[in-house]
Length: 439
Image (cartoon, rainbow, N blue to C red; front, side, top):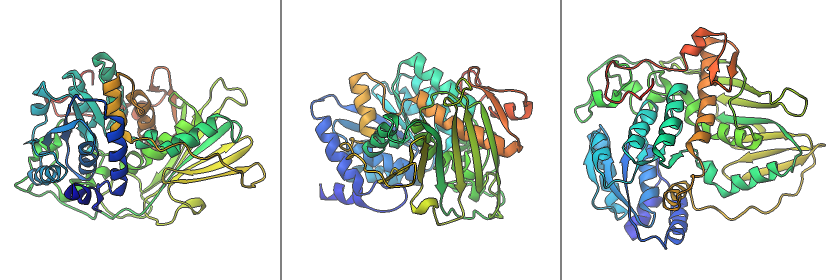
């Protein structure tokens, strides 16, 4: 037990930290009445994969049956970590089809690079597995549509990795907004400001011997291995990532959309941005300002606006608080961060008292497990997850083409702009086994 606690408290990228101990305690209490062991397979053993391994390993009645990664060093590290938290029996494989073929596996955790999120999750649904898929749930808009369809036809529980949906503090703040604390919420702002690294300029090279690079590339168009578009730095390349809007920004976008109370795609997307600071190989913007409009029926009082602000080259945040959200209502405004900051002001800028927060929820992984056992939707079900992930794709497309997009929320199409509409999809390697149905 001392080894388990030490492992959970270790610092470093992707590690859960002390919060996992709290979640593990809550998880044990909430799952105590379930004797059935839930067998899960972890697909992807990078920083986020290790974090999720620790979260799921801490839950009562959960057995980590497989660890999967095309990088043997990462898979080995995850296997060693699993043993420290009492999960001594996971099989280590490089190809996740072996996980899907095992009928004893109930659920999979998809913590791969973005380009594998939807293809792996769709194959898992079709194999009868429940799925926890990291954010954003899809590399592109079309894959998100296909994943939603796969979840519906399979009847599986699919949880999106926007963890704030299981954060009791954030849920309490959203309830206050929906109950009219600041009147009608008309505008929501999502803020993503932090310092990322310059990835430099690279050139093609030879993959390291411990990596099955062909398997890592998967259904994406094949490009030669390059060190600065591989582990983690894949985030900043069109073929594999979704930029920081899809990396960290999706969390704040999801909270903004939740608080704003909109359950459709926006009809207008306008943006400015690009590479203002980094002179390197990154393809996605380091600076973005994106505006989304939800017109409702077009009448005053029914229109809504969502704003996304991103700078990944600065160390200071707006309004004197960490990344988060600002909500503007007809009777005041709210500052909110998922890390525990909530400030509310009236129409004249005077601070307003806030009701005590609700009890902390048990955590996102536990909610996924409970949803499976209880036969219900999870807190971040995939339909809601796609609506938030779609904001990242639409915002990135608008920035890339340099134009305002007009979207038909009903047909889920960009209208009047063929170049932008083509970017709702991606190209794939011909005949690859992981091509999603319907692409």
